[in-house]
Amino acid sequence: MNNIESIGTTRIHQIISLIDLTNLNTQCDVEAINALCASAQTRVGPVAAICIWPDFVEHAAQTLGKHSPVQIATVVNFPQGNECATKTSTTIDKALKDGATEIDYVLPYSALLNGDTVYVAESIQAVRKQIPSTVALKIILETGMLSDEKMISTAAHIAIDHGADFIKTSTGKVPVNATVEAAALMLQGIVDCGRDVGFKAAGGISSVEEAGQYLYLAEQLLGSDWISASHFRFGASSLLQNALQALSADDGAASAIDGY
Image (cartoon, rainbow, N blue to C red; front, top):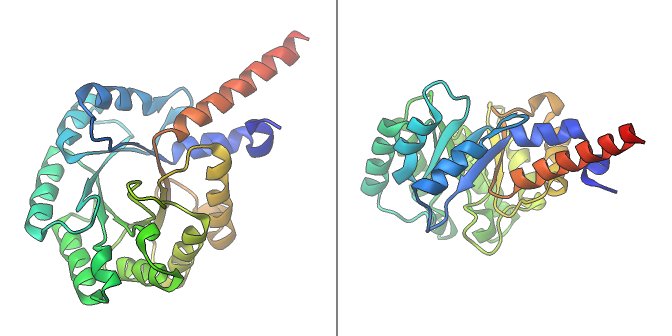
């Protein structure tokens, strides 16, 4: 059974439209950003966003152009969630000036593990106050570093209660990143909160089959109409290539049938 038979062309198109195409490699350079921006405009439409280091935001904004539908996300307090508040604030200010339209902020998960929920809440509040309402704030929970299900749920609720527009699973920089189990807890937190909050699965999702599991889960909890780039994202670097390969395989199969 090929990807199209198991997932479906419409589903793969949907997955592509929800991708935050990511390059957070330590060796990233301008040429890599140029390639990322080019890849973000696919033959079946644009991805939702690119997610890049703050140093490259200005170049990406110039490369994509003012009217590009592709959002520009950058990461702060990344990846360990323990940066000093002044440095985070300075990075955010520059990123916004350079053209970032989304901020992915790592929740101070070590503080949460130590029981300091007040510090975690105040840190998120400070970031929320700093960025305009037109800029999406995605809070990275780093679920693979949290000790149990209760801790993941607590992190999700704190993030939502203090201004998150999205809650995001992972940085992609730890041994355990996105899991369906963590996603279920986070999506349930969105159901419980009654606010218009989105979800981003990030870290280790590289195939349309894997992506389909997260979409199915979200649909079960929040309904198929909820799924859009304003509510659901995949943070990934290789998922786009897999999805496009799946579509190419389907094109080849269709051509073979027509030729027969």
